[in-house]
Amino acid sequence: MQFKRTDVLVIGSGLSGLFASLVLAERGLKVLIVTKEDIDISNSHFAQGGIATVIDFDQDSFQKHIDDTVTAGDGLNRRDVVDHFVRRGPGIIESLRALGVQFSTRGDGHLDLGCEGGHTERRVVHAGDITGTELISVLKDRVVKDRRITIWQHHTAIDLITTRKFTLSAENRVAGAYVLTQEGVVITVAAGSVLLATGGCGKVYLYTSNPDVATGDGIAIGFRAGVPVANMEMVQFHPTILYHEKMRSVLLSEALRGEGGILKTRDGRTFMEKYHPMKSLAPRDVAARAIDHELKKRGDDFVLLDMTRLDPAFLEHRFPNLLKKCLDAGIDMRHEAIPVVPAAHYLCGGLQCTPDGATCIPGLFVAGEVAHTGLHGANRLASNSLLEAAVMAQGAAEGILARHVVPPDEIAPLPRWNEEGVVDSDEQVIVKQNWDEIRHCMWNYVGIVRSDRRLERALKRILLIRQEITEYYWNFTVTRDLLELRNLALVAELIVRSAIKRKESRGIHYNTDHPHKLSEIRDTELCPGELSD
Image (cartoon, rainbow, N blue to C red; front, side):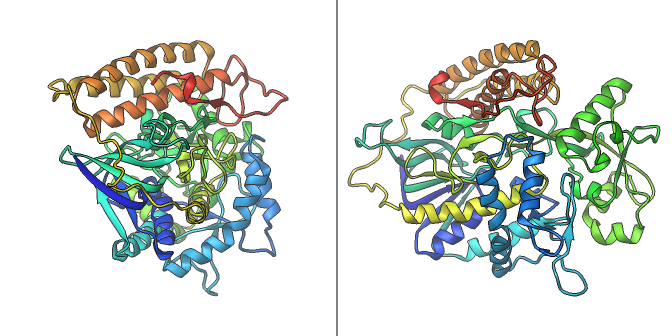
């Protein structure tokens, strides 16, 4: 068994993981980044819209951004947390620009500010329509060149090592993690602190905007280590994913509606005026549910996003990459409407933590979509995700620096990975079958519109699948596919149990058996002791 020692272990290489690593390395700590794919494959990389923050104080204000966030979040947000993130936005933009990020500017040199669904002012700082690509490209270049940062690509985190679990000390704290290499070797990593920055869990659903890496690993790993989760039922469905036979998971940015795109039925009729006063600029939860309702009512496969009333030259300048993607699919948005459908996009719940990412386990921090701080409430306001990722990265890095301890070394070695009694599997078909069954089950029973009966059916099926996966996990050699399946199944159960617990409809959680909101606003919490794993 191999062994590695580092000051900080960062699991995940999106905006949060890379930004935090740079801050930590700059302050002298040795950082190890573990990521399942190439370092630039993450939800952050594919983000199109931008970073929501107040820049134009003549027209906008922190209070307006706070109010828009709480309105979109249907009141479930924690206002003090929203205030924390909103007020740190302008400083984050300056920090990123100082690192070399090139945001789009107007002719006068000022930042070009976009508008998106749910925003009452133009406040989205962007880099054309590939903001995530620009962010990750710049941060990746700096991370790769920093000699204090080691990068393990194509490595998969298995589980955290905590002192209480292995009775290494009376005080519980994180001590490291087990990591699987691409060749199938398990490495024991000792670390003074661990940052989980693994992103979301969109792949738990059949249709999603997320890349294949979004299997909920960080949430599952943190939960198994002892961190509670909150509001896992709050899965946001993006209203506009390209509907195409061969091009799956192509997200069409919120900015398209923000710049004047109109949602229509297949016969060219507008419909959003029936659902929200902001019409096609309605927040995502409203737009996704409205589209879902129209599709079911009419029996259609898709609705249309019509950009044709906008100047073609403007579309070419503002959305060059989205224009190209649509052209690749045989659709010219300058002259014809784009077929779209909703798909699972962003998780508003996650591992419970403070705004700076500290969890209940000393030394363990979380940042980005894996975390639940109370920022998003029952629905994420467009482009608040990159704001959250960057602010949390900086906050988590500062928290790690303030609480840093020397990691365990080989004088008092951590328990090595135990493979006694396991064998290689010749039944990989079981992994694929369970993977497909989970995603179909979640899409059919725990989607945009839910009911008590659907949720109970989903829980029964997920529990049976989890029992089979657990037996498989303890008897066969671990692989990346098996680890992702194990995590996906646990996250599915957390989403279903949380949805069952919420006896109301709020934000992105809509249950036909409980269509109204309760007067008491509370989070849905689940603790590790409530599940058997």
